[in-house]
Amino acid sequence: MDKYRTLAANTALISIGTFASKFLLFFMVRFYTAYLSPSDYGTADLITQTANLLIPVVSFGITDGVFRFAMDSPSLRKNVFSSGILVLFAGGCFFALLSLVLYPMGKLNYEVVLVLVYAICSCIHSLCAQFTRGRGRMQIYAIQGILNTAFVVTLNILFLAGFHMGIIGYVIAISIADLLCTTFLVFKERLWEYVTWKPDLSILKSMLKYSIPMIPTTIFWWVTSVSDRYMIRAFIDSEANGMYTIACKIPTVMALLAGIFMEAWQFSAVTESQGKTEERDYFFSRIWELLQAALFLFGSFLIAFAKPEIMVLAAKAYYSVWQYVPILCVSAVYSSFVTFLGTIYMVKKRSNLYFWTSLLGASTNIVLNLILIPSPLGVHGAAIATMISYMVLFTVRAISTNKLIPMQLHTVKLILGTVILLIQCAFIVLDLPGWIVMQAVCPLLLFAIYGKVMMTGGKRVLKEGKSLVRRKLGK
Image 1 (cartoon, rainbow, N blue to C red):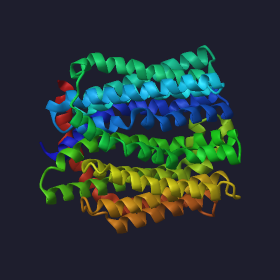
Image 2 (image 1 turned 180 degrees about the vertical axis):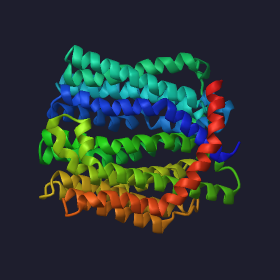
Image 3 (image 1 turned 45 degrees about the vertical axis):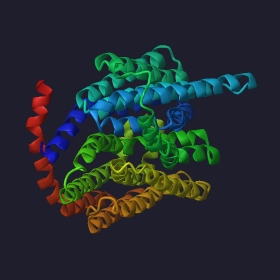
Image 4 (image 1 turned 180 degrees about the horizontal axis):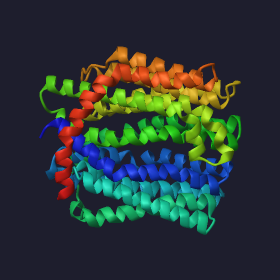
């Protein structure tokens, strides 16, 4: 099967199954801001983000290993899934014991309980979902994403609008949705058939060797993405953090769309990496150029319409946060670039390089946050710190991944695209004369640079994937 056709089909299948779901969750922000104050919304966000920090620790990063190793050999999948269950059970027991130790000390308040519940439910769901994706079951993987969204939306409406449970209802709704999706996957995919009480220890060791470095790596990635919110709360206040959190939702649209593609790309990257070296390098270079074009153009669009986007997304009290959106959009572009390059580490099973590069990005982010947030820049400083740290991380990964798979980075286009986005940001944020005109000129400049690759490459991918998508959906 043609590699472009496979990538297009998997991307389309995941898009069909998850785009509407992700988009609906995005617009749920309007609902959340109606029932949660900026302070409460900021607290709820910190609870979920803290849980996301704990997830790799609870799971020992094993869900990444389950996905990667499930792709290698169908005959070994029973050992792979069972090893994942074993590791996750051990991690869950550890945190259950930790909670019992903390409770007599009077430290187990409701926020700690919510963090633990959220983390454990998310780990269980992730294990089953990533195993399903590793088996190439993209349709089922997409369907469970739709179900998860439906459960989250329904339960949030019930708990926030119906029972007025506030922060607790927000977190519990997500946790219950994870458990319901896990139940669906278990019965739909008959996952009990992949369970053995005596998994191969050599496979378990190989998975842990790959997964354990992903624990600090995921934490470092979380630090780069989220630590600014803790520092805003510490140096300014919870309300400022809640406002900044809402501003982050606009770039999240880009992250969601890029994430859909990345899920399909990871599968193609592993399967195509085993082919001829020259064909592989050209394939990676071609897809990278297409991704670069799409992200720059979409990022420019989000920046240009930052003001009306916030007016649609959030309640009136949040309108002023539009000013943080442009720089955060540039951060989202580079965050997606970094994720794409990280796929090469996954292909080569070089999780140690995940570790070192992510450490550098997190360190850069923390240092810049400590300098810029207490400065007159305030919340703007957090956005700038995030953008710079992703740019540094991208540069380092671009150098290291080139030694593993020497694809063409199209550096000149990359620099031009970045400069254009930064000029666009400066004009709209600083309200410079002619800023409205620049919001039209910058996207046109980007299209002049990338128009050809978007038209030719995009047309080929869509055309080759169309028939395959129809066949798969018709089964």
